Image (cartoon, rainbow, N blue to C red; front, side):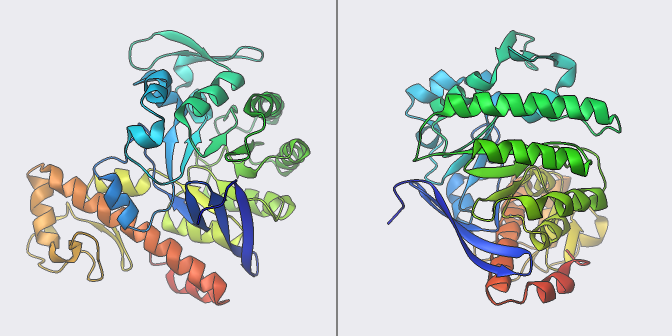
Length: 370
């Protein structure tokens, strides 16, 4: 029986790594958790039932893209995002803040109005304020909403990062006011501050004072090295509330996830497993396989002997190599399903190792392989 309102329970700790349970009215999410990315109300190249069959317990969709197409009102009129895309899983929606950075040639920032966009599709001009972002996410009826923030590009200009941080804190407060009292849903604040410890802690302190349901670390996976990312986590995670979920946005590779879990992170999302699947890359416990490579033309072994979803263990590397070479859509479908399955299996093994106090051994066994 599902919880009547959002909550988080910390269940186990193994050094800094931790496992927990997020309760939402639409289902429970075991942490550490990886969220497949369904940017435009679809996880590319895969049915939602197959996403669920991999063990995924939550997916991510994007406010900016859904606002532009098909439009939040269209989705609201259809009964909300879950009904529209036939998804029973809890859904987290990003706020559009990342697009302010990634589509910066088309964006102007106004402290009061918000982000002034020209659509990347047709150039149409519109404004996305913190209040707009929250109201759009309410129209989508997502379960976990994110505050609108400015996600600055990687920069050594500390003054610029500081100014962006202050803007994000202002927008976070406005987002929280717009969110109001919604016990069945959650609103997460987003910690900014670049690679600077003092700015990260300043951002975190401001957000804690606003009392969010969870705290995300943003502004990473934007060009910094893995060591820089881990340094930021080392600087900030120990000061984050223990009784709230910790979400590292836009990350990442299996080694990124292992390193972040080792430092106390609970939630992840990344397009890597799905995007890689569409370009011929398979994630396995023996490492990554580039199935475009000619060496797989005569390899009749499966990508993963242990696959239980859609009998993927019956498709050979040779066959997938053939599908790739002939531009068959089935290649993307097989590899996307394989990769999401791998990521969910990784998270399950991580959770088990934390519960049995063996995460450090698991980390050491796989950090240089996967």
